[in-house]
Length: 177
Image 1 (cartoon, rainbow, N blue to C red):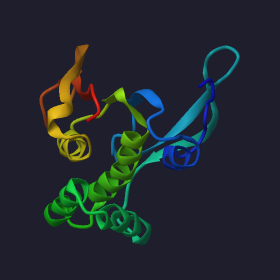
Image 2 (image 1 turned 120 degrees about the horizontal axis):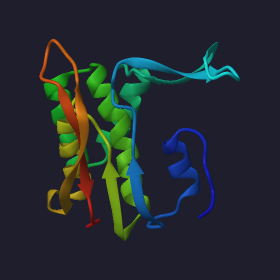
Image 3 (image 1 turned 180 degrees about the vertical axis):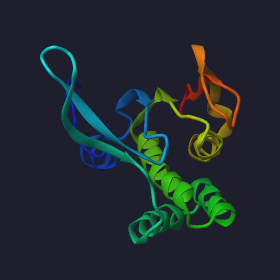
Image 4 (image 1 turned 30 degrees about the vertical axis):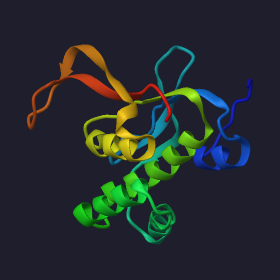
C-alpha cells in the first residue's frame, strides 16, 4: 500500500479502503484511561523542554454525538446491534458506553476491509478488554477467536488498590469468517 494516513481511522477506513483489501490489522486504540496525553519536547542537551502539544484525549463521554453513533450501530439488525444494546442495558449512557460505541463502529469497518485470510490483533487493557472481547465475538464470530498474546513485564506496576500488573493481554482474531 505504501500510504500513511493521518486522522481518525473511522473516516480513513470509510473513505479510502475498499472491502477485503487488508491482510493484517494491529489495533492499538486508546485504552479508556480517562486521561489526556501531551507530546513533550526535549532541549538539545536532552532535558525536558517546557514545550508540549496536545497529542490526544483518552476520555469518552456519553453525549448527543455519541448517542447518534450508537443509534447508527444499533439500527443495523444483527449480533453487533444485540451486544451493543445489551451493553447499554447493563451500563447505561456512561463513559464506558461511549468508548464501546467509538470502538464498535471502527471494528465493524475493520472487519469490512480485512481480507478473508486476514488477521486482527487488538491491543487493550483490563479497563475494557472483557467488553471488547464480546464485541469482537459479535463482529467476527466467537469461533474465529484464536488466542491471546500476553505481554509480560519484568516488574509490576505498583498500586495500592490492586495487585501489581505484570502483563497486558491482547485478544487475537486470527481469521475472518
